[in-house]
Amino acid sequence: QVQLVESGGGLVQAGDSLWLACAASGSTGDLYIMAWFRRVPGKEREFVAATSWSGVDPVYADSVKGRFTMSRDNAKNTAYLQMNSLRPEDTADYYCASKGFSKHSQSPSDYPYWGPGTQVTVSS
Image (cartoon, rainbow, N blue to C red; front, side, top):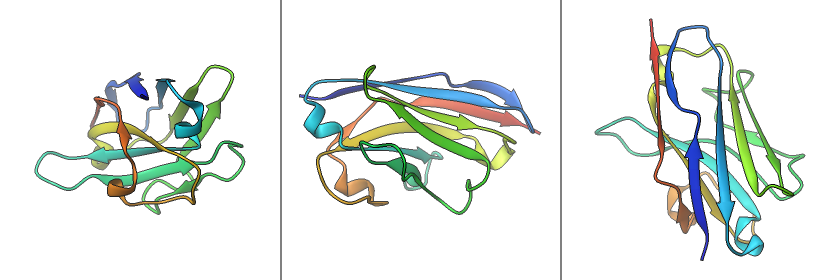
């Protein structure tokens, strides 16, 4: 059973940077793809970024491309999301997700494992 726990959220000002971390435990086979999603209350979860085991091929949502960077440290079973040039519209609950060997996916329904989330608030 995979367990994911996010950390690093908080309140920042527009233009600031923030790091999120996702610590994982359980079967490494279920951590082949790790991804970040976010959700604003009342809206659907939105894809942010995903990367495969190698970490060399991250994909990003257009809304964060060039500002966010996803990486992972497999020795620590941890994925990261570096968020630069934050905007008020980045305010959301951020979730880490994972799935086994497969292609990248931007659909939340393709991910069986989820963390509880961490809140990011960007003030203007």
